[in-house]
Amino acid sequence: MQPQPTDLQSLYDRLRESEEKYRRFVENAADIIYRTDGEGRFIYVNPVSLKMFGYTEEEFTGKHYLELFHPDFRNKARQFYATQFFNGQFTSYLEFPAISKEGKQFWLGQNVQPLMEAGQIIGFQAVARDITVRVNAEEALRRSDDEVRKLNAELEHRVAERTAQLENANKELEAFSYSVSHDLRAPLLTINGFTQFLGMHLGDKLDDEGKRLLGIIRTNTQTMQNLISALLMLSKTNKKELEMSQIDMQELAKETYGEIVSPEAQGNIDVSISAMPEATGDRLLLRQVWSNLLSNAIKFTLAKDERIIIIGGRIEEHRNVYFVKDSGAGFDMKDAGKLFGVFSRLHSDEEFEGTGIGLSIVRRVIHRHQGEVWAEGEIGKGATFYFALPQG
Image (cartoon, rainbow, N blue to C red; front, side, top):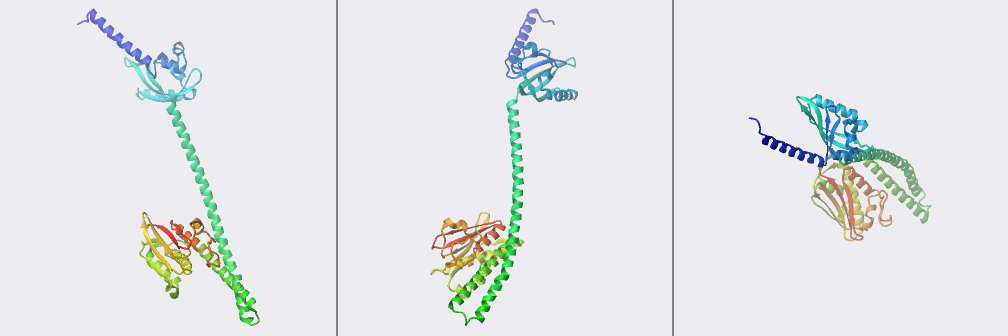
């Protein structure tokens, strides 16, 4: 049945209305919309296209789509679309740098579809959106990431260099300390031997002043020998290979205390050694830690009327903490940072004897066990020395 004239008019009106809606949509769109013929030359562009590229409608018409691409990208775009359509992928998306009439560069993300008629491509239609802000942000982020990687690489290189330099310096210092200590022992033994010889063979001929001076020489040579022994122990502490095992710390503390304190002195000190968590570490080095901390506590406690030493330990999160608390001379907390330095002493020889190396040995041993040391004290009210070890 053939449509009546009124029906044809109605169809025509609806078609014209539909085309008008489509035209308004395209012309008011925020994106670039265009059509080309089968060779890729523009036959229609919407107002946004004219505004972004800076061409008039007459200048646009007949221009090839590749002329809108940045020259450096045209071959890549031609190859991309040839591959897409050859493989039958008729809907394709491409991001590319575009260039305006005035030479301004910006980025577009473009969807292209072919226009078909009787199975043949008669043209193309495309919708493109300005993605310059996003591309610039991604490029800035990439540059930032590159800078961060470069800085990290430089930092790692510097750290490696500084670490190597520090290791070499430590090795040289240890070698120097070891060599000097050994070289000093011989003349000190000679001096000590001569003073003993003089005391034995010239004792009757020496007056009181001569005897006093010989005594000072012997005392000072003994002090130097003690210092050398401490330096050698410090050097050995750094060199010794760690032999890790499970250690009963309460038993080790009791054993060490019994070895370094005479029975007479033990009777003058009130000592408490409570239960404490086992440790994972080098038994020989940790014995040295207990020896230095206990010797330190005993030295300062014996000078007081109240002689109390408390030894214990506890578990804190992922580490074991051990301590030695005494009722001795104590110290000012503002000097706490000096306690564990080599040759760092808060008291004179007249007050308390010492080499100033014992606590430094404690710190090095604990640091080699990936732990930490610290102290708390108050002048005249004793001190507490702590060390923490990671749980095994």
